[in-house]
Structures are given as structure tokens and as C-alpha cells.
Image (cartoon, rainbow, N blue to C red; front, side, top):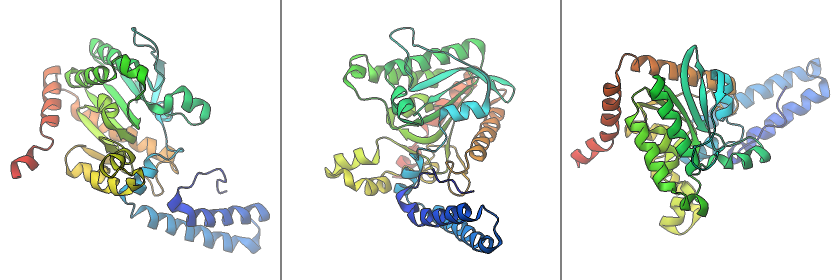
Amino acid sequence: MSDPTRTYLDFERPLAELEAKIEELETLSGGDAPDTADETARLRQKAAEQLAALYSKLDPWRKTLVARHPDRPHFRDYRAALIEDFEELCGDRRFSEDNAIVGGLGRFRGRAVVVMGHEKGHDTESRLKHNFGMARPEGYRKAIRLMDLAEKFGLPVLTFVDTAGAYPGLGAEERGQAEAIARSTERCLSLGTPLVSVITGEGGSGGAVALASANSVMMLEHSIYSVISPEGCASILWKDSTRAKDAAVAMKITAQDLIELKIVDHIIPEPIGGAHRHRDESMNNVGDAIERQLAHLDGLDAAALRQQRRERFLAIGRLEAEAG
């Protein structure tokens, strides 16, 4: 059966009409009536071809929309699919708990790890609880505390990044938002155990870098990673947020752009139609990619891990600068 609760993006409207027709036929016929079976099969084939065509030529703005899709897997989904024996650890030991970043101890495919990530929420109540994945200073200080714990016990750290950016509220600024982000970034770079990060949706500004200054940074195929949102960039450059599509193209925010610029290391393929349509397959692909990266980092001591991480980030932009 088709899923009548599926959320469609603007560019998917023709596909929505086809799948609504399929749903209507299945409802009327019970799904197996001979007089509608051929028509349903024909429409299904047409919908599959249209879906493949749409996702084969996504421009940066459409990728942005896919990266923000409400049905895309969030941290809680990856945690449930990939992490066993998860024990959440809360609080920064200074001010409070921040639900925008969730983290703790667990086992990834039999291996003890520290895992954390931005959680956006899946409905109104949980989105408010998690502040739409926009962390306050205490969230980043909690991340530092978890990385300290990982180093103490020699555990790899896995981070899942999906945030529009750090929370810009007055209270967050008063409690040292910039300092907390800087110290979290510094802790990533100084960590003496393997650190693997995955951009699963939006990687927005310093709020993303604070968890993604890793030995290996990977992106899902239709995720984005940028210094500012396309809307914010358009507002600054052209005083017009409606030009977000132009900004998305200019900023080079897609996985395909960023791997060429050597800002990310690997692209994790998504099934046709995106991670929101094939959640289990997508999360398994992410797990396989993390497992490969951890295997590459096995055997490196703390000094080698820090040096690899340092060289990785210092190399960004260097070739382009030298060529210029």
C-alpha cells in the first residue's frame, strides 16, 4: 500500500498526484482486484520512473529541502537502529541539561563507543523539547564532558550532525555560546580516540563544526553543510531571503561540492527518493560507512589520531590558495 501520511516537497507534487491515485485504486479494489491490478502496476512503474528522474537531478536548493525533510531519520532513529545498550548521560555539570544534543554510552556493532548527536524531534511536542536541534551552550559543554569520558576510557566517539545552527537566543549568548562552541571544537581536535562524524541532514555553521571536527567527516548524499543557511546568506548579501535558492547554489553546500573541496571525506549514498523514503536502508548504509572508517583508524595511537585530524583540517583550502 502507498503511504497516505507521507510528506511531499514542492518539487514532488507530480509524484504526489500519482501516488494518491495509486492509493485511491488500492482502497477501492482492496489491493488485488483484477480489473485495477494492471492500472495500479502501470502507475507504480510510472511513479518509480518519475521518482528516479527527480532525484537524479536535484539542484542545491532541492537538496536543502530534502535535507530538512521532516521524515528524514534523526539521531533518535540512528541510535535505535545502530546502538545497543544505550545509556544516556545528561547535563553539563554547570547549568542544565540541553535536549538539543543527546548523547551517552552504548555499543556499535559490538564495540563500546560514546555516541552523540543533534535531535530535531519528530512532532510538535518533541521539536519543542529538543529546540529543533539548535543547541545552547550547555549542549556543547555536555558534548565536551562526553568526549572527556571517551578519552578517559579509550572509547571511539561517533557524532551525528543535523542542526540549522546553534541557538541564537539572548540567554545562550549570555551564557557563552561562542566560547562553548569554540571549546567543543577544540576538544574534538585534541581528542585522543577515534572521532567519526556523519552529516545526516543539515550541518549548520559552528553548531555543526562543534561536533564534526573529526578524523573522518562523512555526509549523506542529500545532506548539506554550510557556514550559514541559504536564507541567512541571501538576507545578508541581497537583503532578500527569498533568494535562498541563489545562495544555495553560490555557497557550495552539497556533499558533491564539498567532497571536491576536500571539506568532507566520503559521501554515503541514499536510496532513490532519499533517506526519508527508505529509512532502514539509509541507516544501515550509515552504519556500514562508520564501521569502515573505524577500521581505518584502528591501531593509531592518540598522538597519531591528533596529528591526522590536525593535518586534515589545515589542508582545507590550502591547494586552492597555493594555486591562486
